[in-house]
Image 1 (cartoon, rainbow, N blue to C red):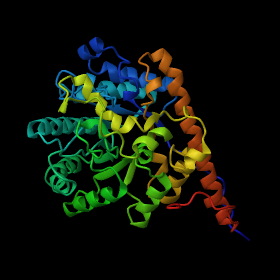
Image 2 (image 1 turned 180 degrees about the vertical axis):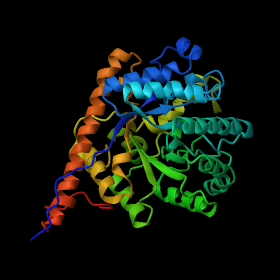
Image 3 (image 1 turned 180 degrees about the horizontal axis):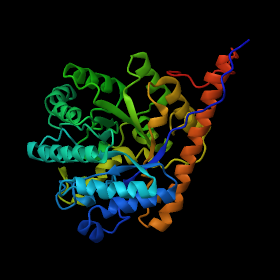
Length: 414
């Protein structure tokens, strides 16, 4: 008699990155009372139906090296670290966590850790160390951010710079019992130069190369990837093939966190500029020189926006042909592939909704609330559908020797 395996799907928690609403707490209120923004975001997340938040930290606008008007990629200093986070502050936040039932998944600080200016780099590293100390006091397992790129050096030279400059950050994470999860966005708009890949940890082959450096220095367990499928679409890749590449190479363990953000490719933009985007006449250069107007520097993002637009999960039309062409995220297969190919604990890794869909980036909480609530619900239901398919096919049917029907999406398929 065949073994009977009961149907028991495992779901992923669902959360939201607090940069989704940068001004939930007005600037004048949160500058005067820094932890009020965290408390109010935990309240807001509860109302959204989220299990957790990814707490966004950033250099305060008064000390940031990039003017606010030059930023297209949204950041938020929900966590204000102008003054170090203390045990007293942690206790106050913990009360809000207990009251709302909403957890903090990790603390995120997205910045260029390999900036070519030594003074600016030092400021960013010092801030990341504060973020790490905060993560310890909050009892969260990881910080999330970028690696970045030294614009003065080649990619191969950046590997050496990573070893010299970024590995010490990983050692600091190890000393604190933390993982450092790296998101893979290439950040093409970080510079008016024509480099598209300004975060060297932008693709699986690079993740493996960087992890091998980390292993040589005893910090391999600290270096993990916070996977975001929107950036895969930007690079012309699909999630299943990327996960299969990692699994085939023995690195299926590298992904330790997930953003849930899509990308919708503009076929006309691809026809005009191709993957790699607009590299002339963007508006960030004037008469052959980098514009002196900080607002013009945001036009460097045309390298990306000319060919695509970010998707808040659930807001883009269902488009099977686009899934097959890797021109938008196939959310169901994304969640199936994660379960089938990666080596991670599904129940403990949250799906963090990251909102960067420009048309819906309203800064009015009453307007944004139903939008985010709908996206979080969509994400949760997609994951439950994938979890149910996985449990039925790979556990229930497999236990009884019943084959799964069909072929499904295949990695590397042309």
